[in-house]
Length: 134
Ligand SMILES: [Fe+2]
Ligand SMILES: [Fe+2]
Image (cartoon, rainbow, N blue to C red; front, side, top):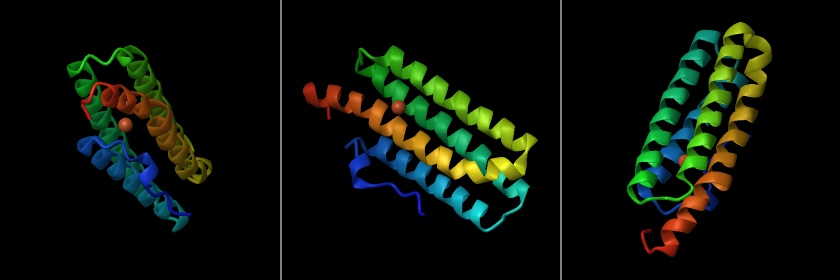
């Protein structure tokens, strides 16, 4: 099933929403590649793109949060760091054993991405709205 961005993930912060949409697109592309039996090198290259886009996205959010003095920045930074670690571990496991990992990559990623937005980013949006910053 398609891994798609949905209006319920809308934060109202344009750059954040664009980056979330891009991450969903990459994850869905990965899902299709795995489903179509794409070769290992292609999947691995796209996983590396996903890591890079995730790092860029987290840096964007963190800079914004720091700029407006978000009080939960510390815990959000921890959350980002642990999400990036899980993603890097997944990439490392994939490099070890391509077959088994290829099957779980899209499922893992979809849950990982939804969790990031629903449980993490919305706390920031609530903060911005309370201060009329968004
Ligand atoms: Fe985010
Ligand atoms: Fe975040």
